[in-house]
Amino acid sequence: MTTPATLRLEPVTADNIDAVCAIQVRPDQNHLVSPVVKSLAEAYVHGETAWPRAVVDGDEVVGFVMAFLDIAWNPAVDPADRRSGIWRLNIAAGHQGKGYGRFAVQAVTEEIRGRGASQAYVTWHLGEGSPEPFYLGLGFQRTGELSGDEPVGVLRLT
Image (tube, rainbow, N blue to C red):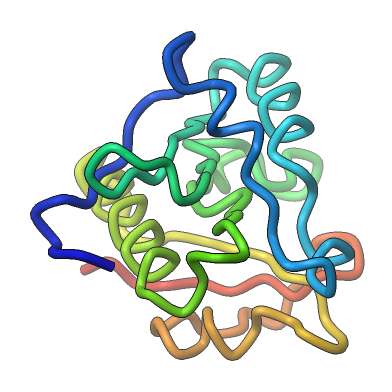
């Protein structure tokens, strides 16, 4: 990572879509996160709640992050339970371990805070190579809930 001043999140546009779609995690992580192209398709389908962004350092796209904003978490149980959080995080294999993931999560949580939410959520796959230690290290705490077979984590933003 160069300097924090060079890091930013940018919307996915016609100018950067090829670089964004080229983002690939390490081969041993492929079972942990969907490819960016699937995320962009989901963002298209869920346009009102998806917030996809390129993670950019200087002029280089180094990752992709997508948030979900103000979704009804489990409307059959509690229609008032609306949540925002990290939906997807892909940092290019050659750029991992440089602080880009931490930056992306912090930038998304600042966006969520700026929209008035007091908590941010994330889910993760368990097993070998799980990102659980990464998210717990950023302050997320398990809620005790599962989304499918993935644990749910929450970060208090206040």
